[in-house]
Each structure stands twice: as structure tokens, then as C-alpha cells.
Length: 464
Image (cartoon, rainbow, N blue to C red; front, side, top):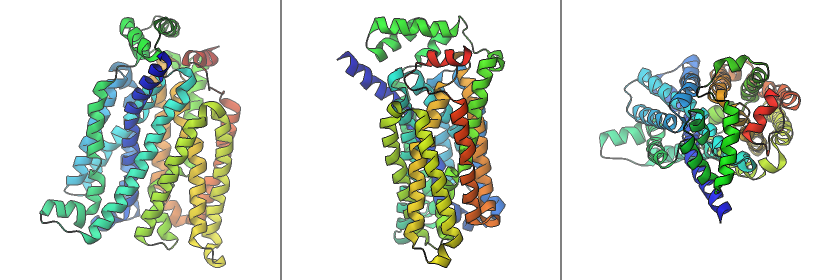
């Protein structure tokens, strides 16, 4: 019974924090169905179109820089509340904006929310999870991200179909859901953002943050609830206090110490290289890429729904096996499949029309790529980043890695239209395939297997 209470309570905490991932996924992916509509509405050129896609990513970069400091000073829980407010303001503002400048401003606000929640939600889940289930529970965050992707693709598709047939008597409703349906797509995020804000009040603060701040009594109570056994909780608290070393605030100078510096550099490299293997190009520009292959607008959005469904279902599989198979093996097999799929996609664009390949071949290659990516890089990256840093620098170190990740994401989002136009779709996907090689080499040479280790044991690995 104690073990059941332990599992159910950890699941409750993980799922609650993972709602931030759903908002992350929705806000990130909803853009894919609005690019062409917003471009037509405001007469954007290719650079302005790239800025529309990339402005939220610029906000995300700023958000991750603030997230570490906020989470270390305010606590993980309060920082999640901040992100919920940012998402709500962004969604309402995008639905009601008066011009393109206002739209960009509100997208940047949403990007701030993405940056903050991308650090603090997996960090919180990692700190409230038992070692034997940490990979699975942190993967709930990635599962929620994929659910956000799928929700965004589905809402985009349904609202676009509704806008072609429906009519409303109220002028502002007609404008948001029919005349300028992209407003409804962006504004639909309001409901899950408000839900996230409310449910955060039902979870406790991270016990490791409480211990870091010297609030050991509260930390012990939370650990007792998580472990279901007070003696086990006391032993875990003692290990945390040993790791803290008596310090109640993060020690920035530790970032430059030999072992921690290595961990930070490795995490930064993992974060940025992962963005140059094409996943965000598919998520942001999927419909545009399918339209370049000759598909209609509605067919392109429907294909993107299939991409989102495969992404989510594969993440469920990754969640079930990540602690059994291990982080590194998932990356080896998954990234190898990504490289082969990207080569096939590039070949389809290079020779598809000349050889008369059916559209299903291109779609199958995309879905295979998404499967391989979801079961490896997407499932593993946030788990690795949330567990590889010592407690006294965890928030700041994750912000550094997150800054690297979102910088890479911004560059890919900004440059993809240019690459598709100048390198051609085939050249773009061949480039993404080539970037899989250094990523696998980095994981092989520099990253230890962390499955089954406590956070304190991982810390000792880097500082041994």
C-alpha cells in the first residue's frame, strides 16, 4: 500500500507539472497552421515570415535565461505560476491583437512562458521523482509536449474546416473563428493555460529546493509523502543535505569547477546539436513543406495531425522503456533511424517527381522520422538535462543548457524558409541528416548512462 501511495502521488505531481509541457507543445506547434494565413493577412515577405515564426523562439531564449534564477529564488512551484500567467496573456493577446506588431509582441510573451516552463517543469518532476522511475516520470513532460503538438494540429485543422463552412452573427466571433481563423488557433491556448495556473496550487514545493533553502522540516514532509516511508525520506534528506554542503543559495563559482564545467559544456552541446537534426523544421513548417510537394492546404494540415499522433504515441512507448533500455541506447537506435529517414525525405524531394513516387512515400518517410525522433532525442533530452547537474547549480545550469537549446531552435526556425528556398528541400534534409553524426558521437563519448542512479549519485560522477 505504501508503494502504491508513493507511485500515485509521484504521478500526480508529474502530471500536474507536465501540463506546462502541453502548453509548451501547443504554443510551439500552433504556429505551423497559421504561417500561411498570417502571411496572407499582413503581406509578409520571407524574412518577416521567418520573424513571425522565430519571435516566440526569441522570447523562449530570454525565458530560459530568467528561468534558472527565478526557480532558484522563487522556487520551482511559483516559477511555474509565472509561466502560466505568461501563456494566458499571450493567448488572449494574439486572439485580439490589432496589427502585426502587437501579434509579434504577444508571441514573444508566449515565448517567455515556453522558455520558463521548459526549464522548471522537467526540473520539478526530476526533483520529486524516485531514482528508479525518474526517467519515466520526466518523460511525462515530453509526452505532454507531444499532446500539445497534436492538440495544436487538430485545433488548426478543425478551425480551418469550420471557418470554410460556418458563420456567426456576432462580429468579433466571426472575425476570430472565420474571417481570420488564425486568431482562434492562437487564442485556444487560453483554457489550458488557466487550468495550469489553478492546479499548481495543489502541489507542494520541490523538497530539494526546500532543503537548499534550509527548510528541512517541510522538505522532510514532502519526501515522506513521496516515499511513503519516513525513515527512507530521512535517509534521502540526509543525502540531499550532504550534496548541498551547508549552502543555502546556488554557488555560481561551482559552474567553473572542473567536473561541473564539463557537465555544463556537455549539456549545452547536447541541447544545441539536437535542434539541427530537423525536428523543429518539421513541427513549424510541416504544412508548408507538404505544400511544396504539391499537397493541398487541408491535406497538409491533416498530414501534420498524423505527424502529431505518431509523435505522441511513440512518446508513450519511450516513456515505458526509457528506464529499462537506458538513455544512451535509445539515442543510438533512434538517431540512426532519423538519419536514414532524413536521407529518404531528401531523396523524395530530389527525385520524387521524376520517378513518379506516390505521396504516401514522402508521408511514410516523415512519420518514420518522427517515430525515431520521438523515441530517442525528444524523450531523452529533457531527462538528461534535468538530472545531470548538482543541486546547488541545477537551476542555473539548466538555464544555460536551455539557452543553448532555444538558440538552436530559433536559428532553425528563422533559417528554414531561407534553406528551403536556397538549398532546396532536398538539400535542407540532407544537411539535417549529416548533423545526426556529431550528436551520436557526443552521446557515445561524453555522456554516462544515468538510468537508475539517484541525482546525488549522478552529481558524484561529475565531481568525483
